[in-house]
Image 1 (cartoon, helix red, strand yellow):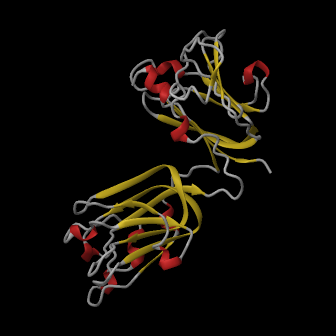
Image 2 (image 1 turned 120 degrees about the vertical axis):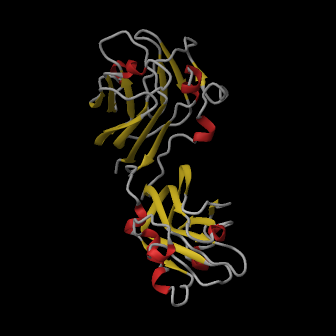
Image 3 (image 1 turned 180 degrees about the vertical axis):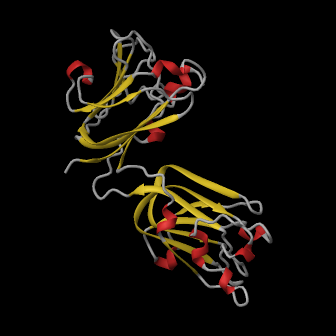
Length: 320
């Protein structure tokens, strides 16, 4: 990854509430359109797909199965509204993996048509027997219900595990400050940004809200202004991704500061965390425990240094 790629992929996203890494499916409730007939009924319960067991041999009792029917479906109720960022589905290994071909994943908040009329989120072309396939959505898809349905006649649906990852849906205003598709590359979108200083280097002081300041060395800066304003927020966590190719140690000792002041370009705001080190190409999450602030700064104090950030994610909620 070169410097230009790092910059073009640079992103600040503010999403309501902390992104969680737990498998939400384990805490939900599953149902399906029908249950396979005896003597296989005991092994085909809908709940088998969310038991945390990846055993893909049907006779071991950890897979689901419907009868042969038209448009068979399986539904997971997360019991609350979430923003779903990924789903992993494990297919049956011992027999008939092709049965899952063409299955659709629907996510939403409606139970119309048993949830199968919710927006289409993904489609399974095929999953080899015993293997898992993961669907990821960078922006996330809001919904309480996850449906897997195979459209068509005389189909049988079997799932050996379904994992769902995401975070609680916001109750209030969506505070996403950027549309990722429209802002991932500030160089390409010069019509939407006003570059005030052309000394464009690779140090970054990240300001969340009205201004996004990309600083050079200690005495240089490039400011990109976009036309929005953001109110103060509670920041729960900040995720930072380090560059992979070289000089990853340059980020050692960087500080994350959060607050509402622009004194010293925001670098005097309270400190959330100090980055001791992040392995090349890896990401680290720093918990900020609901610190209040409009501006997020990443600064390397005390030395003349280059600051390279390949991804910055900010998770929080608006102040009441």
